[in-house]
Length: 454
Image (cartoon, rainbow, N blue to C red; front, top):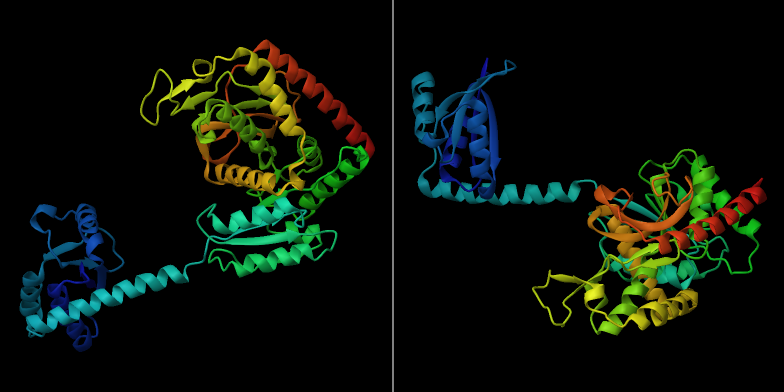
C-alpha cells in the first residue's frame, strides 16, 4: 500500500489548496494514506534541498512549495515524485476523478496565514514544554560573605544553558543561609529554581552537579581537625555515589591539601572531578602589574602560578600605549613593556605577598573579587576554555617532574572540552627549585593529615 506525502511552507496558499484536497480524499477514501510535513518559511529551502538529495529528486526542477511524492508504506526506499500542486491535481483527477477546486485564492491565502500562526505557536509551546537543562549547585559554608556574593553572581550570570538549582549547606544551623535564600528568591531570576537550605552534607551533595567547598580554617587550627573534615566529605561523596559529571571546586586556605585528601579517600570519582581554585591569586598578580602599567587587568594574560610561585615568563600585555602599538588583539611580552627591574624583582613580590596574606573573607570588597574569580573558573570548567591557561590546583599524574603523583598542586591549566589539562609551559631552574620546596612542605602536611585520619 502507498501513501501520499505533501510538504510545504506554512504560509504557502498553494500548500493550503493541496492540503484541503488531500484531506477530502482521506475523508472519502478510508484506505487513502496521507502524511503532512509543514515547515517554517526560513526552514524550507534547506529542508527541500536535503529531501531532494535523499529521495533522488532533481532539486533544480522543483524549488517551490509544495512538494508531493508517493512512497510505499513499510517498504523503505526512495519515494516516487509526483511534483507540485498542478501535478497533484492531475494525479487525483486521473486516479480518482475527484474535484480538485476546493479553495479559491482568497480563502487559500487566509488558510495559509492561519497555518503559519498555528505552526509558530506550536513551536513556541514545544520549546516551553521541553525539559530544562537543570544544573544543581551546592555551596558549603553558605553563611559566609563569599557565599553571599557568589550566590548573587550565579543569579545575575548564566554559567550554562539551562536553569540553576542552588542548595546552601549550613552545618552550623544559623539563619544567615535562610536569609540568603530569601534574598535570592526576591531577585526573581527566571533561571533560578527555589533555593534549598540544609544542615546535612548528605542531602546537600545528593544529585549535585557542582559543589563549591568554601569551608575556612584559621592558621592555628589543628591539622587533624582539617583532615577529618575533608575526609568526611570524601566518604559522603562515595556513599551517595556522585555522578561522573560532578565537579568539586575547593577554595580558600588548605585548598590543595583538601583536594589531595578527598581524592585519596574517594574511590568512585575521577581525579579530574576535583580542583582547587587559584584564579583570585592570578587576578591579584594582574591587578598589581596593571596598576604599574596604567592599563586594565583584563589586558594581561599568561600569568602562571606554580604552587605559591609566580611565573611571568609567558605574561603578555595588550592595548598598552608604548612605543609599539597595534590592533586590540595585538600583544607584547611583559618584558618589552616593563623595564623597571628593581620593581619586578623586589617591590612586585612584596606587594603580592602582602595582598595574599590578607584574609579576603572578612573584607566585603575582596569577597566580590573572589566570587568573580570563582565564577570565571566554573564557566571555564563547564563550557571549556583552551585559548588561555589559568592557575588551577589539579591532582598530579606525574607529568610534572617536581610534583608527586596524587598530590594537588597549583599549576598552569586550561580546559579543552571542559577537562582540566596541565598546560605545556617550560619553567626556569629558580621556579622549579621553589616549586620543589612548596611540594615538599605540602607532602609533609599531607602525610601528617593521613596519619591523623588513621
